[in-house]
Length: 247
Image (cartoon, rainbow, N blue to C red; front, side, top):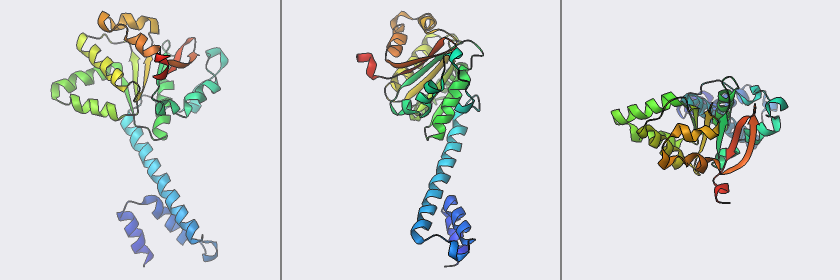
């Protein structure tokens, strides 16, 4: 078969990685060309890498992360109570596989949002669908979706995400409807999918922020399932799993 026809077929099938390697091999001297088994292995590997790259690009675009951050840029030192070892403990995104949650609190400028976005980017790179929401936009999105009939669609989008990041938790007042919706979303994800919550409020003030006696124990329900805890600038950065609540 004519090599150009083969390249055209690969293009039609959108096998970009295979096409690239095929053209590269055709350009090699005959004596340097790989064996059949090696050639097939190279084709498959190239296509897998190409698809992983496209998936990462798609997930990053859909995630709408606030910062283009990477974990290598996160500043670790003992003075901040954040060491490389503690960061590496979550860098493999194993917490997502275990459906654990992360809470990050700290003052303005402490780098908590940057850290959350770096973890979000890492999740996208490793193939986990991720969504980022500032709390104001998140609550607006919930309200608008109820008005325009897309509420169920929004819930389905959130449900499909392996990781959601809610930033600036505590900066926007909650009315009864949005409070219950937000906490229902978090509870529905608990033990199934992962959530990162970023807040300036110390955890002890979450009760006051939520401000409804019938659900004021929710922070305790969410927090007490802790299996690891580290601190950033003397503020909380914790991973939570469903297993420890019952122990």
